[in-house]
Image (cartoon, rainbow, N blue to C red; front, side):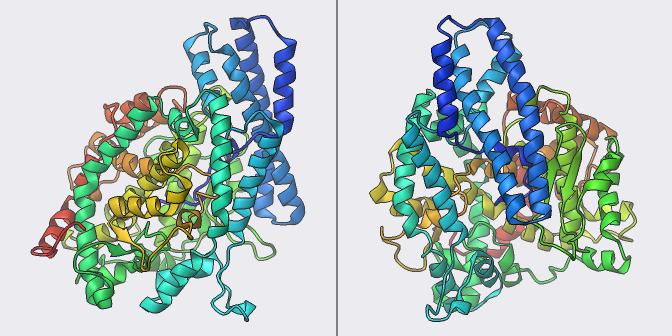
Length: 613
Ligand SMILES: [Zn+2]
């Protein structure tokens, strides 16, 4: 799973935005002009207008975004910003206008569209133009501070300065505790200047959310999930309780191995040091795999080597991805996909190489943008990105407001679900591997996957736990940092290497906080992908352990998947979920099924060792 802007789907990015004074002025004028109570006919007309305008603005913004990321220049960036702004101004305006029809009787699908417009905002600006402008500026300023964030170990030498990429790399590869700690602390020096802005931002964004009828910004975010905001919070806790025993086992095992490596810096019981897990936020532990790998961990083959030996080109690899989807009965990608996608890093210009899937015209002009290397990781990422494209194409006949995933966790989950089907057995079937390794090799593969997907779960949950409490006032500005570390201890069982007083603002050192991007979607995606995988594997008639199942060549599984994809956002997500799983409840037990052999192995490894913190 890829989080910061990762596997980005263009339309999503555009919904995430604030309105400006301009749009407010339009609404006020609109209200004064029409005093008569709106009718069902007015509502229909409003939605028709939204559909047409949304189509046009989305097309403009996607094209501008595509060009900006494929030809990075000041001009393309400015054009992209302008198109994005037009889109977000409109979204903000529609969210506010949709309220006018609250008491009008309209058909159910129109009611759903009106509701979706109201909950589409991530940031609601207050109607006071000055406050609205202040809020918009605060967000850009926080983004700017984070984006330019650098840590300079030697303040006299500019060349010593490290940006987020440098620090990420150091934390992933260094095994020198002192060096890692310095870099970890260094990165966290970028965020204290954001603290005051964040406080004011929370105040003003709450004001905007209240004007739209929500208790606060957190309640507005939770309102997107087709259930009462409090019920949704309880639902997340329930899911976490399901997987927590597996997380505790993984935590205990990693702590034991890191203690062997680093000595008493890593306690034998108690929380893990947050800086030693190979990632700035301890959200993905894959980078310490070599320190915790079991003996005989090697998978028995290297897909990367096979791809290289076979001289598979980038196009060959994408064609293989397309064949996967064709094998489950989905129509081939359009010719334009092959003509317009970016598959290789160009030699003549700067591009954004971070893998992403695009839906330019909201109909058939789907593309991926990726700088493909001959690696196992990219082979799997191709399957993931194409998942977005097939989803986008499946819902392309619905009204524009419904052309999105069932909730914001679903889009990422689909790509990852398909990537879970990239198993050794699948590689054998497509002729890349002669023979699948026997089950004795599974632990290494499962452990490395758990370091990514199981380790992520508590982090995926706690970011918004913190923000929701900040927005509701339960966490006061004086408690920002303490509450952050309380939550990290409670959920992740990690602690900072040194005392973090309230002079720090450690939540601000995570991109999604200053950027104001909700985070629960990544938690949901992580849960859902295993649930989808289990259900589809069952449909495909798979009888091997779940982690060895691939839905390759199963038309039945493809049909079920497509039933869900083609619903887009037109039905509440529990209905979409039921289309694949026969259940309208999220269920984290699929994760336990998938990792069952690993959990058993972890229990054996940590026998007699403390579990928990
Ligand atoms: Zn993605």
